[in-house]
Amino acid sequence: MVYSFAKRMLTEPDPRLLRKFALNFGLKGVLSVEKYKRRLKRGEYFPPFLFISVISGCQLRCQGCWVDVEKPSRQISLEDMNRLIGDAKKHGNSYFGILGGEPFLHPQLLDIFAAHPDAYFQVFTNGQMITEETAARLREIGNVSPLVSIEGTEIISDERRGRLKVLNRTLAGLEQCRKHRLITGVATSVCQTNIDDLVSERWLRRLIDMGVHYAWFHTYRPVGPNSNPALGLTPEQIVQVRRFVVEMRSKLPIAIVDAYWDDNGEALCPMATGASHHISPYGDLEPCPIIQFAKETIHDHDSIYELMNRSGFLRDFRETAAKTTRGCIVLERPDIVRDLVNKHGARDTTQRQAAMSELGAMQPRHSQHQPGQEVPEDHWAYRFAKKHWFFGFGAYS
Image (tube, rainbow, N blue to C red; front, top):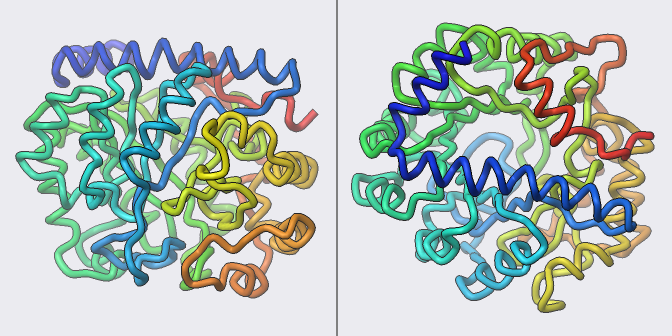
């Protein structure tokens, strides 16, 4: 498997893009985690990975979306993006996850990428705006990996995304990525309607045939104004997804990403460990994308580092979440999330101003933390990487 995957990576992407990936994401990403470890010893908390929602607008209407896509679209300016990315880079960060809405609706998105050739960007996108021209520009810029969301078969995709012919348009964008030799991923929010079709070896083999280099399986989280709890996975299905990911990592020449388990198969939350926090389209500093409350914004101080490091709200969320569960505190204990928001007098950062009532309506449910059901990493490469660069960082000790 290692040889086959290495052969794919050495022959399919543009060599210049592969070098950018190896340097800006690989080497610098490792160094950013090492710097984060040293910061922790000094009692400083600034995550090595930032996730930034650059725009709230989107052309789709997905089930369970927590972004205010129905409201007037808001976006982070090019100037503010350059400022916060520049400040993060000063402290060793090199990787930035770009979310929306649909990021490619941001009129200056490609200019943002081009302004930071020493960083690496992963764009969470529905893929429908990756045209021939856009893919060519991404290849020219060289430091971007599109992570294209696919939510099911043709019928299920239309149902999940709230529009018609979604899958065909998404696959057209994916083909442009392959044609222009981009390093490309496919993400799936696994739920009741797509688990049988997409959590399968057959689907991964199809992705390989389409030139996809990595897959990212999230588990559906019923939050937001139209949460649709019926789509959520059962505890047994969550373990099924985890076991599938571990098995396929040793079998197929495609990288498989997950963000919710360590090398021993124990659950973790990236927010609780301090590995990542989220910046909303309005500039709010949030614990994670689905916790839409904040005390600070990027407009409060020139340094994003100082804001996050000093935030008592973010610190309390990290510490309380880690003491409560190794899983998702929002899913398991929405009551504690409400208590923390009230304790700090945090603002509802949504345009709809209904996040607190949505929390109040949530019923506690299982997340990835299921003691006794751990599935440890089997492949040596994933086990080594997780043990050293993606783990609990002492949060659960």
